[in-house]
Length: 115
Image 1 (cartoon, rainbow, N blue to C red):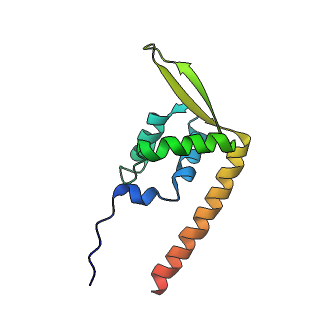
Image 2: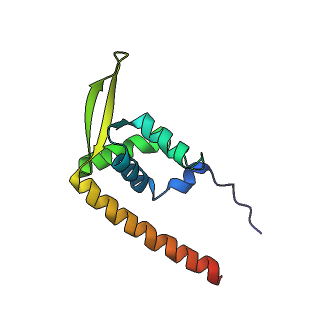
Image 3: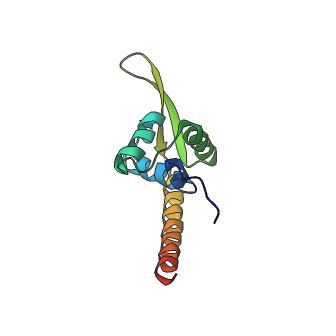
């Protein structure tokens, strides 16, 4: 029997990062990237982790798609931060992503029950 390497926590985000980011920004607008990463970890009780190497390209892609908008702000400590918020197109995409996730989850559950 073949031995496969154990899955890492980041594997569980594949295909769901957009959904998670859009959902978090729908509830907590004006977050910067690190706060989004932290929220994903905290809300999931550290089961899910978004790494910088996947989160920031995803944020850039979602901004180019018009789902989120970004703005540079100056924080109290004088440092600049790029904050993100959902657009109307992002709210529509969030609905589509939630529907897709519900269909996938339902299909997986059917396979688990029937297998």
